[in-house]
Image (cartoon, rainbow, N blue to C red; front, side):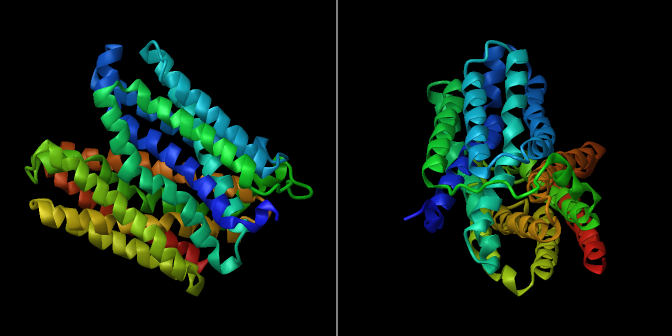
Length: 382
């Protein structure tokens, strides 16, 4: 029996890669106090390491998608995971801040291209009406990482040292490469595929509008997530030991959203995207007023996490509008999410600095979700 007849195994293999990527992306934030102390740098300087990774994602996704246009998808996925394993393994051995900065940038390069190509492979194995569910299964690895992988890496950093967190990610990346080699089908590049064909996506108005929905509308989720720990400590006044549990609830909310919402996408992809943005705007606004009580803020965080289902919905939309430039469009979706990851915290930080309180990150997030809804409306009319 061929590999292509086992979509569940392929989806699992690809989700393991998502778990590895999600663990290193989010755990680096929680490991920051440990590696900053070990490398002799301040926390703000150590934050540049996280920015270097995000920059690698934004630049690497389109660059790799274009240059690898003629490479078979399975081969590309294996290569991306081997690069990811090498970069994370070397990060665990980084002797200085500047080496770590460079290695985190290199680690970020495969991120967007991996998710983009992995979702295309996952979707290609199921009927059209189940494409969003297939894409969501790949992303499940990332959301489960926020529930299990990140706390485990943080525990490793505390008990045996921060370098082991990156070593575990390297092992998981190698495991992904092996699983993909075993189970993923061989899919040769489309006839006539070339870098110029992929660049054709940049001429497509609907591709840009779909990316805009994610880059702006998803910023709200990140504006809250970035300042959640500070909000819990300074506004909700909980003990520091409680914060990880609330972060886990956030991850559980995202997981539930990814499992449930894509099942209904076949009834109307764009309407569901619009309703998700409306839901996110409402829940983000409520977060500001729920922040003063541990029970209400936990419920709000779970509800905000549900809005993470927008990811596979937009990914499916890109499959519909990108034409022959599928790989570049899919990879750019993750560049857009990293733009959101920069935009949300930047605007929320400005509001906090202006004296509106750390809980105002919710209102900033609601405004971003509504702005994303505005882009959605333009795309809908077009």
